[in-house]
Length: 316
Length: 293
Image (cartoon, rainbow over all chains, first blue to last red):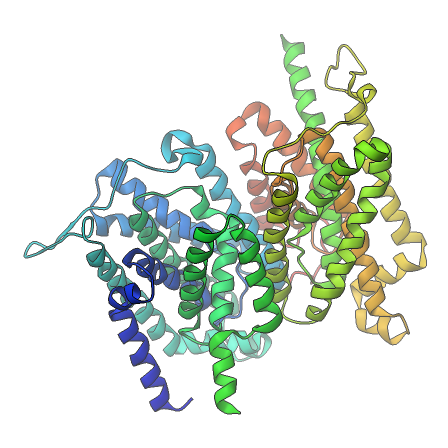
């Protein structure tokens, strides 16, 4: 794509996001759905930092998403933290966990990496499931809600006003996505892409592979945990399903569905997936079959995702 | 008192061995498919549930023994159809795609199982004489548990014998190391992969029938058993079937013991074990050097 086309595309995405609560209603959606798309989009884009741009297959990102969610929810419920410190705490907890687990798995690759990340994800699921006193167990963590944000000079009521919460989430989304774009554009980001393209060559060129993969894993988990914290705030609730492996799979399919070789692809994939899930689960009991079918169809017919198809269409 | 305690421990170790045998039976099938074709079959748990429900449906007509014999090959037959239709085109591609496809299949399996047989768990009848206890002192030694151990041992022994002594087994083992060479030597790799997949699914079906007799039958039975099977493979070492067997038994016993001393960590303990193994020996206990990269 030419530079002008890229700029136009970026501008279009920004405009669509900026006015989503307003056009969402016209096509049968609602503000909360728009917020969910932004949050899940952030999660899928964070995963794609590792999956699409470093070429490492993680299938356990729900663990860090859920840790962010529980961290934020528990900070509000037990510590009486404000909204922003709560998000911060959730992110710190998840990032520390990612640092430790990342160090254990950084030398593994391919299917093995995928399997180990899936399996490790389940530890946190079982902890949340079993530790009733603290986490509420299977019923989830209730009895708290997000709080209005006081900036001193102004007060943003994100609790009562769901449009205000949408723009709050969008602002955080913009910060995280901007940071990821900046990182990918730096020499560090170029090294990650070099690892994806040819790990052996990158190693010969002197790129410290393990260190780069570890760092990419941690960054990816950090941003996915921010998404998790926002998700808990959105629902005023979190439960062990925010940590479970099926959510990890959903993140991966969002990235693939939108196009994991493109920066915005996962956001588009998340929008399609979340809207579809919302529609299907309100129309049929058998939404699992439909979602499963989406997985099968995407793999068989759109392996390069929506943006990948558009791009090859533009080339032809 | 001491004696009662030791009995409790013994009970849980034995229980752990049985659960571990399930994990191993399931993980061996997963491992076979993974080693030869590089596919992580996430739908393995779905096949296990299918085997169990097929047996449940067949029992009123052909009895427990008939179902035990017939349900696993029926499951394997369905596995072959799915392999032929959906998985075969993905061989040699990024493992991401086969993982996503089988992940989607797992969703569909669970939902269809629920649709056909209902969301509630259903009772699974095994012959009454198998349910009696063999020893008054060791009350937990019911006939069914011992019987299950024998069947699992026979299945595992049979698998290893096939791999070691038959032409098919030799080809599978060779293909695991270097599929291109095997292909060059004139072996039909497509058929080899299909048969291998079929054997793996047969093991899943068999595990399903046996598990249903012990744990009861519900649509999530497969989803609950698949994660520990992954852990069994990782602990035992990728590429080593013996390692997978060992890994399965070890994590079974570990969670059995945790159930005595640390009940709330019954599930988490196997992941801690996995972390420790990865820390000291990233390729797993019996994993071959160089396979993990």
